Image 1 (cartoon, rainbow, N blue to C red):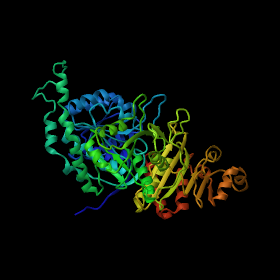
Image 2: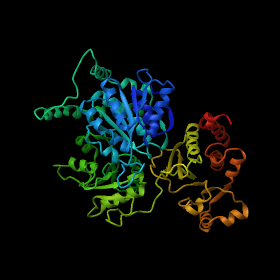
Image 3: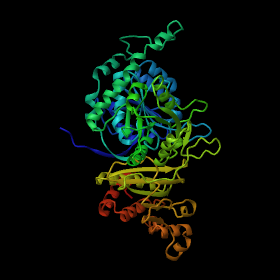
Amino acid sequence: MSKEKKFLTCDGNQAAAHVSYMFSEVAAIYPITPSSTMAEYVDEWAAAGRKNIFGETVLVQEMQSEGGAAGAVHGSLQAGALTTTYTASQGLLLMIPNMYKIAGELLPCVFHVSARTLASHALSIFGDHQDVMSVRQTGFAMLAEGSVQEVMDLAGVAHLSTIKSRVPFVNFFDGFRTSHEIQKIEMIETDDLAPLLDREALADFRSRALNPENPVARGMAENGDVFFQHREACNKYYDAVPAIVEDYMNKISEITGRKYGLFNYYGAPDAERVIIAMGSVTQAAQEAIDYLVEQGEKVGLVSVHLYRPFSAKHFLAAVPKTAKRIAVLDRTKEPGANGEPLYLDVVDCYYGVENAPMIVGGRYGLASKDTTPAQILSVYENLALPEPKNNFTLGIVDDVTYMSLPMKAEVALGDKSTYEAKFFGLGADGTVGANKNSVKIIGDNTNKYCQAYFAYDSKKSGGFTCSHLRFGDKPIRSTYLVTTPNFVACHVQAYLHMYDVTRGLRDGGTFLLNTIWEGEELAKNLPNKVKRYFAEHNITVYYINATRIAQEIGLGNRTNTILQSAFFRITEVIPVDLAVEQMKKFIVKSYGKKGQD
């Protein structure tokens, strides 16, 4: 008997926190963007008395640095408590010494990482795989997800597998693109996962805890006579991981109906050109593949889930036997290396294989650089060349060392029924918060799928923000910015002169402007190129003076709720009365703690 599906409108961090809470007894935390909200959720739920699988409340302890958090995780594991932490970027690097110890001592645990750029020539708070790639040598198993739904489905696999295998796990997904992207997803609940827990393996873990009744010596120093032999003793544990992970993925697939493998193939069964990638780019790639397969092209994609230990057997089974050319996409850069890590792993899998395909590698998406289906088309075009470019870059124009693939014009490849909206705002004017609420209102009150992603510069308060929203009747795989919106709202009139706010707005689309100008003055002050765009593309234009309304009703510079109601009125995505009623609920939720006024 299948139980009723329960939907949740949330981001990747909340999905990871939701699952990790079930399996954690202790969480040692230290905040770092973009992982902070995972720890915040866990802290909030613990304070509210939420229970984990064992019927207990998680003990949350904030430390004074990431090194401290990792040390606390290590100590807590030695004491026999299931312990978790959440981190990214330099924070993860500060945990490396403890990670070697945790793995070397075969202590089961999961580090949830919203993968982020490392500071090199400059710092960036945005997402790529540089941090997780720099811990692949620690002995942690590594599990990757490409969407918010995958995080919900597979985060539990990391927790279940680590307990059974004794090998610790890094569970990672793309910082910002997955960690902060809001999607309507199917929820997995405690009673789905609790029966899958290996209670015997858990009892063994507890029995190994440091205990004055059974004294043991740990963490000794060894010399060359025995160190090497002991270091090799862990091999059998790592050899067992792929089968354990695969078994749990099969069990999760039975619960959800979504098929997961260590490597998932998507595309033409007889594909000749195949991309290998992991993370959120796999979703956008699926759109490009559907487009090409419809035109009769033989292309496909292998999405990597279990990255460490890398199972060559499972990998080769996932790639179609017809593959003649392979492009491996890495979201990291290792200057001076012969190629990036995933590329080198794939090349190694074909060592000694007869008629092995030609393999090239490329880099994409550093610091959340947007990766679109048009760029994926470029990769397939490169593979079709007599001599495909190796070691290429994607999505930038490299006119210095000429490593980049040609930039193609963007094409709208998402589902035709999907409605796309873009909101230009100012950091701290409430635009982002209001849009988060809008998506939740639509997700919770309709059968529509929805997605929201918020692009902002690192100045945050007072900086530029752009919200990208999508709604549709089918699941949304567009893991990139909205480039062809049906609706654009410009909440700051100065942006008309600063940014190309009408760019890509579809013919017959809608434009909403928050402005203090009216009538003749508005016509005079609108830039000519904007007026021309409106005329040529038959755009319906609305304007509102939300700034004045906000001041009149005592909201100060918070124009968000006024503009949010304007959006619902104009687009009628849901009935206006329902929208207003739900907005009032969310306003109480967002601002209630500041007092009833």
